[in-house]
Length: 272
Ligand SMILES: Nc1ncnc2c1ncn2[C@@H]1O[C@H](COP(=O)(O)OP(=O)(O)OP(=O)(O)O)[C@@H](O)[C@H]1O
Ligand SMILES: [Mg+2]
Image 1 (cartoon, rainbow, N blue to C red):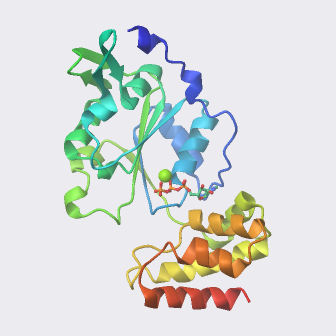
Image 2: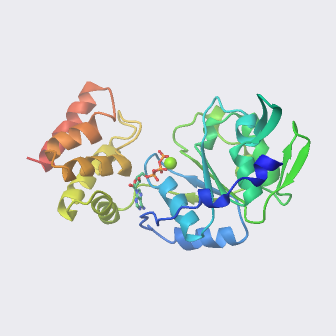
Image 3: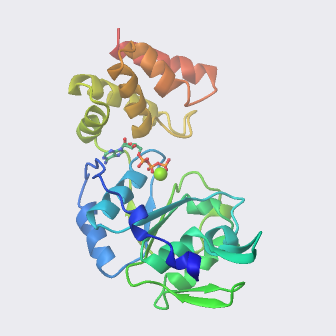
């Protein structure tokens, strides 16, 4: 247990307030969910503010935050923990989910649908009335700290049916649907985040909105708020806006030459 007691929850506290612009009543609703430590799922496209929202809420609630980026190679042991062999013999090392359950953190499982189903089921006993985490290999039944909360995120559009979450997993969570913010709010975010003027930010948002209309017509996804912030940061550094858009908005989006041309033409209509 010595290494467990050595964990200092304050290392997971977000000290400076992250900039988060609420788009509706999600802050208040999250707080109400947190009051009963309700497991929460955030659904929405890439780069629309899900992670930023969780960071903001963890700061606001003054609670530690442990984020895990999930992937298809992830095993239950990566979440829960494993025995390690070192010079002094064998010792148990808690995984991030276990650390969060011990210290009473928010555990944020990013892109949880990417994880295999045998991985996602380890969260089941933690996300119902039991609030326990069985550490089978270690022979420990961990009762979650009263402040532990699980938050997961995923992008409903990207997964095949095979990879969808099971109903028995889904129905353990309260949910928030995220999307790219309304144009005026998104422009405000981009201007604030990158330190550029609102008029330029509004143009970037209009370009993004055109690209979002191409979703399903040659594009899997339109330009995200994240990419708009990248473009704005380049402009802030003095890069010519057209070049900034090409680099940050257009090139990463697709490998299809026709669509690339269409997007570049769109950029031309906003920036000389
Ligand atoms: N409401 C918002 N307030 C402040 N910044 C925002 C907001 N929405 C988006 N952003 C900006 O967009 C960027 C991307 O957001 P974030 O990293 O939270 O996306 P995400 O939804 O977690 O994406 P992914 O699914 O790819 O992880 C942030 O770094 C931030 O600059
Ligand atoms: Mg994220």
